[in-house]
Every structure is written in structure tokens, then in C-alpha cells.
Image (cartoon, rainbow, N blue to C red):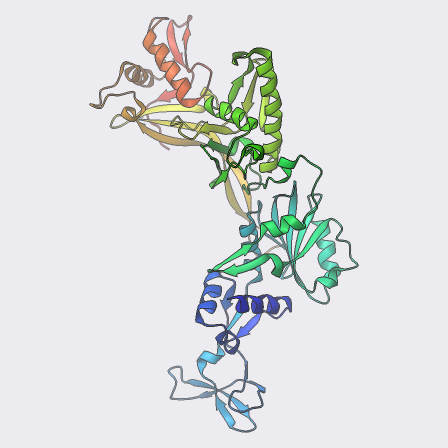
Length: 490
């Protein structure tokens, strides 16, 4: 496979990325099948020129088609030969394959786990692959196929499209053609040194790239953190983190990745591999309280509050290193004196409702559905891809957009503990059903313990601290602060 991969890179770098059947026959059937299955090689039309294999001249001739009853198609291919006069060319020898450079760029971006959409900047020559954090800072990554004539165009275009302070330029072809042009903001690497192909897939050595990058003068732990390739344009409230025993499970907009503590920057090297550090302890505290820490409720007085403030500052830095998201990941709400995560965070074993970050009871709607179940929907912003046309372009392009949607989940009341195994509701479950059936209004005394217990259960299950059911002295009734009623059409 190594010889086939090198041949593919070499031919692509020359600007003539087409292989004949005779060339691929030297690779072996497995190599050709794997490269074809990956999409890096695509079979094209039949060859118009073929090298003669009937004499020692190895001359290349144009294919001539003649009528023939021997072929099902009624046509047969030949080439002229000064020795054999006319040589029949089997249809198999006319097969040819071309390198899909766009697919190569997409697979390099995927292997590097870059955030963003791969963009063809110069057709067939330069691609902007995306960005991620490497060696202490976020960097844009480009892929270029450099021939003898376009070094200046590639470098000038790459510099113009560089959004970060520093970038990575992976070059396939004549790297010397870039010399003399302005690439000071780029670390230029030869693609064959870092990109490989094996077992049917393309791979990129991030360790090799990081070793070649200039290190920033930042904290040592921050410098070794690699960013998580979440979708471009993601906001903090669209991020969900489950804190597991030895890892973090990150979810966002359909993307999911599990990070070890070391990958996330939370392993304390002084105490051995896998041992958590103080910021992780505070993150676990956030997770156990569904993303909120009230400073006044912490035991240990001002000393403990000061420690938490310091570790929250460290957590902010780490999350900005892990995720290319604008804004503050942890917000200080001065009036109540508490910290609130702008993202959803919970412990791995937490079976509560996955409440979106920043949601309140006004975003909720609870409905009673059939067979002893309830449906709960929460308003949130959903990211989707939209296809658009521009007047000066024939082909559509896609871009990310967002819309407000209510995400619904259904639960069995028995599973939630609001009904017994027989299906009969518990007192709290019956109270909830009465609230739903009366569309949010319940005539009960102000000190009704069942209502109070239900309110506490809803707070603990959703992680929202505000009371979901409050007593109105004017109406002399308990009023739900979430929407409820009969099922609506969804």
C-alpha cells in the first residue's frame, strides 16, 4: 500500500493525477480496491491513448475503434504498431482512474478533526480545511497542491484567507516554489510527511504537526490541550458535557466525542496518570449541581469561596482552549452570588432531564399522553444546514442557520418514580396529572406538602432552581410556571 500511496501523491503533485490500468496493475488488487473505496481514486472514462505491449518499443498510440462481431458492443479497440501493424487492446486496459483532490482535502480535515467547512479557495490548488487548537493556540489549516507556476498565487491567497494569527500549510508538490513569498504566519509542512494511508483510511500525524509548530508562551497545561472539533458557529448553550469517572463526554449539534482527562487537560501529571486536578473537582461540583454554584452555600467560609473563584478562572481558560466558541463559558451572576455554566453539565450517572443551558420554566411545556406517560418539550435553538443560490453562481452552496424549536421527550411515569409498578400514580404523580389536566391551576392549601414535594422533585430532575409551581394569593391557587395542557399537534 505504501508504494501505491506514494505514487498517488507523486502524480497528484505533478498536476496530472490520472492512472492507467497498466500502472494500477503493479499495485495489486487490494491496494486499488482500498483507494477506490475510500473515494480518493475515482474511475473515469476510457483512455484515448495506450502504450503498446506487443513490441519492445513501448510507444504510445491513439486508440482506434472498429466494428467487430466479437464484442457485445459491436466495437473493438486497436492501436497501430510499426512491428505488429495492428494490435488489439482489451477493454480492461482502457480503464483509468483519477485522484479526487477535493475528497483528499475533506479526508485530511476529518482526520485532523478540524472545526469548520472545507472550502475550495483555488480550484484544484488550495483548500481551507478548518481550524483547531494545536500547540497552545487556534490555527487555520490549509492544503495546497503546488506546481512550478503557482507558488505566488497560493501563498498570497492563503495569507489573505488566514483568520487566525498563525496557520498551517500542508503542501503537496514543489515546496521550494513557495520560497521568496510571504508565508511568515504559516508553518509549512510537506503533506507526505504527515499524511498516510492504511487499512482503507487516510490518517494525519497530529503529534508530528505539533512538534513542528512554534510553542506559545502560555501555561504548560494549556499548551498541550488540543481543541475539540465542534461544528463552526456553535454557541455555549448548545454544548453538553457529561463528567464521567475518567473522561468527559462532549455533545453538540449532533457531534459526540469522549475525551480522556489528559486530553481535556484535567490530569495532574505530578500525581500520576489519571489523577484529577483541582479544576476538575470544581467541574464535578458544577456537574453535581447542574451547572450552578452558589458561593454562599459552600462550606468552609471565605477561604473555600476564594479557592472556587480561582479554579473557575482556570476552568474558563481551559474551556476556551478546548472549544472555539465566543463568549464566556462560566458566567458570574453577581446579584444572587453564584456561578452558572453557559453549557449543560452533569455527572455521568445523572438520570435527570437534559435541560439546555440557560433554560427557565417559561421554556418548558408538559403534556399528559397515553399509557401513563408524560411528554416534556423545551424550547431551544437548533442548528441546520440550508442550501442557497447566488446570482453569480450556478451551483448551490450550503451554510449553517438556526431556528427556534421545541425538543420533545416522552417518559413513563413509572420510570420517573411518579407511579407505582401497578401503574397507579403516587401522590406527587397524581398532583402533576391534576395540574396538567387543569392547564396549570390547582386548588390546594398554601402548605400542601404534596405540591411542595412535587416542586422539589421537578427542580432536582431538571436542575432549574426556581420554583416550578407557586402559590398565588390573589387567585388562591397553585399556578404552574411552565406551559401545560392537552397534547398539541407537533
